Length: 181
Length: 401
Image (cartoon, rainbow over all chains, first blue to last red; front, side, top):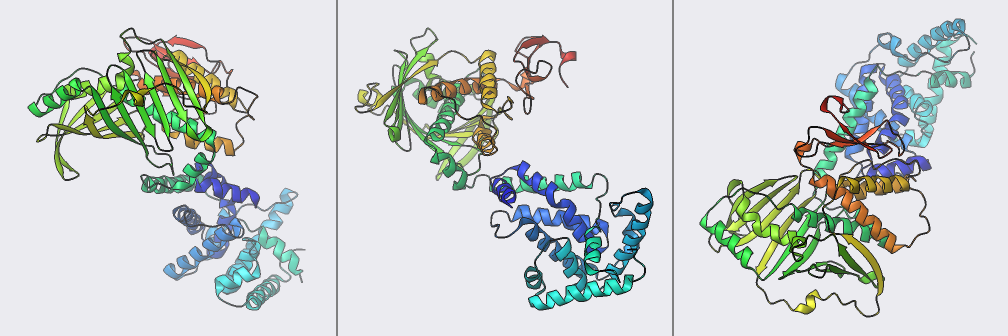
């Protein structure tokens, strides 16, 4: 947090190194966030670029009041919504399965097993209503609080919490018996 | 049923990996957007960094000194052959040559974010006196006949007494290159630019392109007056000077050029080398800088226009060693002088020298790494300075790529 404030402070004073450090710190996380919201890696990469370019262009007025990651995650979520609105379509997770990073695993066998689990989970996530999916992804990949998600979605905090809970319940029931323990 | 926390952990592990080269490409675009933003901002004074710099009196003086000296260096460049003749131009040249006193204003601009333009009033009087006044009451007087100078620093109630050595043996006039070269400038224009309007006056432009510098002279053909001189440094992009408000033969009292110290002020001594800056000056500058950094690295750039900004970044990043016990202000002055002479050497190198600086991230003592090279005029080989500050003559085929 302190480091982020320092980086933003330096960046506001024209430090390219600070901007580079911010990018390197958060680009992967934003890519995962956008990728899980859009199921489209290329679009997710575009979103990450848009988020940072807009960040650069608006840095004069930017004031870091919360976490930088939360701010960037909110920007990414808004960009993903715009993207979905423009394209008015949902892509299937299958298109991008190959681009997902390999999950951590203890052995090659476990890696294969886990790989299957992740494909099923990803597919199930993509089948959720977008609001539930967005809530889950912002909570787990953007580290946003429910009240921040609620504000973004223009709903009450309780509604955001409900969306999260219902979303996880659906995932569990979809995956029940399929995901290995 | 799988517990909710397990699902949450698995979702957290649903990560995407960027395609090969994507991050480099996107980051490149983002940095380009930053450059674009900086370009758009250039010319708009943002007081933030300037305020930060000015909050430190020491830094303020050092920065001001570098800028003032850089402007003076700029005037040093006004030399060389070539002539363009128009009757109005010749008359302006004649007036400059004949002037017993001369007053003008120099406005210097730098590309440093947030640094406002610096305005300096310059007064010259024959046979060899010069006075420069800056905002805040900073005054410098030079008596190049005696080889002495005085600078007043009002906020600290200090004055710097300068002893100038290595003056050319010409009665001190060479030290007024600023004036002598300004005087010779109209005779050496190599390009006629046509007309433009300045403050409602139609003026004619002439350009003088010389080693490391481009000067544009604007004169009023009706009144035969010198209206404006613009200066731009090839080796310091964005650092420009504009000379305006010329007045010739105004009555200037000798008191204005007195080098008697003011009462109640503390003396600081400074030896000034009035000779030409040399390769050795650059080496000493590099040695000095590397002694300041925690890891012994050299300056990231030799562009004086970026000096303040770069220094601020390094200070904030903790890259400078804590100040060592020293003679305080006098050491600061000596260091400023060393830095200035080192930068002067680079500023004066012409484009044909093909000079290159590769000292960023290089460390003092690294005898294998070339950090600076240039081809002296008339030489078949280039001079290469290495990280241990040794110098070798290198043939073109063996130059660093």
